[in-house]
Length: 209
Image (cartoon, rainbow, N blue to C red):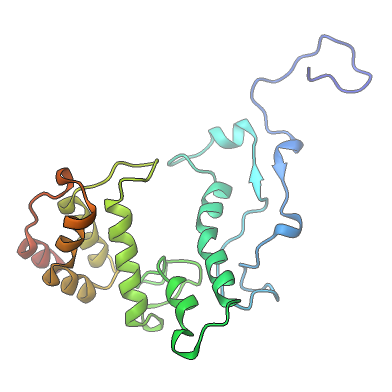
């Protein structure tokens, strides 16, 4: 194993290495997410990794934070790109014409650091802000995610309050969400009893400033 053509055995094979065959090029699968790409007619503004995947051991052992490489993270984030492309190809009636945009903005942030378009707050409609909040709440409380345990109501809402202060989600939409009690109705229907802990709504509102 590891011998090149014409190379006598035995040979030394590096235990850990980044080899050319570890690189998976984009080829025809290159997604049109860069702003200067003529095929990008959806307004995406994302940084595209140099390759579709990098399977090198050294590359994967050099992750500074978390467990994902740049290529892995892009592949996860690309789901929203494919959502927009797919929905944009469907013949929605006029009153549903914004469905692709609304579905495609749930990872945008008010401070403009979201994706896939990097939209600023003034570019996000009320519907965009509501779907972003709903997506985060569902993700935090979901019990079917293999990469994390489900969080309790108090943990989830505290995280969302921090996100509102940091201008990742709309603070007024979050405040309405708290006061409406819809989170409690959702919990009664979909969360386990262990997740339905006490929530101090007044304290959360005060934390918003």
